[in-house]
Image 1 (cartoon, protein in one colour):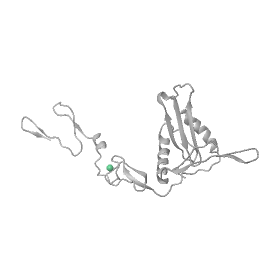
Image 2 (cartoon, rainbow, N blue to C red):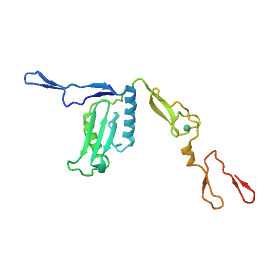
Image 3 (cartoon, rainbow, N blue to C red):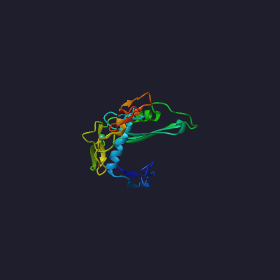
Image 4 (cartoon, rainbow, N blue to C red):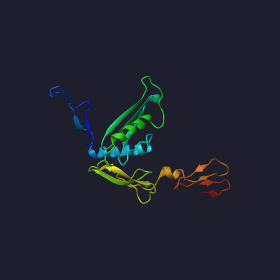
Amino acid sequence: MDGVFITPTLYTRVYDSNGNVVMEAQQERRRVMSEAAAYVLTDVLIETGRTGTARNVSLAGIPVASKTGTTDNAHDRWFVAFTPYFTGAVWYGFEMPENVGFAPNPASVIWQGVMRRVHDGFAPRSFTRPDGVVFATVCMNSGSLASARCSNTRTEMFVRGTVPANSCDGIHAGAIATQAPSIVLNGSSNIVLNVGEQYVELRSNGYRFS
Ligand SMILES: [Zn+2]
């Protein structure tokens, strides 16, 4: 059911003392994104959880897709995360707001403390990859499909049909500028050349320097 919105409810059924159902939650379910898009988004949230401000959170053999949240002046801290089994959300703060900008994120510490016990006895497993998710190697400098001229590449996950159409031409402007030579002529200010550019200066004595 990945990608399906379900109305949040606090209960499923309420019975009277005779066992008759007196209230039953009506949950709306509607698809808000494709299964493939949900899977790619989940992968992004797993990755940011591994490298972001709440990277202290982990469960043995079970991936955690997470998002932190902080309000102005760090008055509120949030940690909302889900696994293939459960979803949990933690808010941390005071009734009379105070700065709670501690590290690690206190909401994530609580989430982990609770969810490690909740997941006790559940077998390691991953999120199930649906049809429509494909992999492609892209150039990290240009974002295009990697070509033989690219050295900084990464294999990324895509929803089928959204893989970059163009291959990288190998001209990596950002990366090259930082490595380009800087030349000082006659004590003048630095002249920075990008690869492929040529500096030409005509001297007063008629010599041509390039
Ligand atoms: Zn490239």
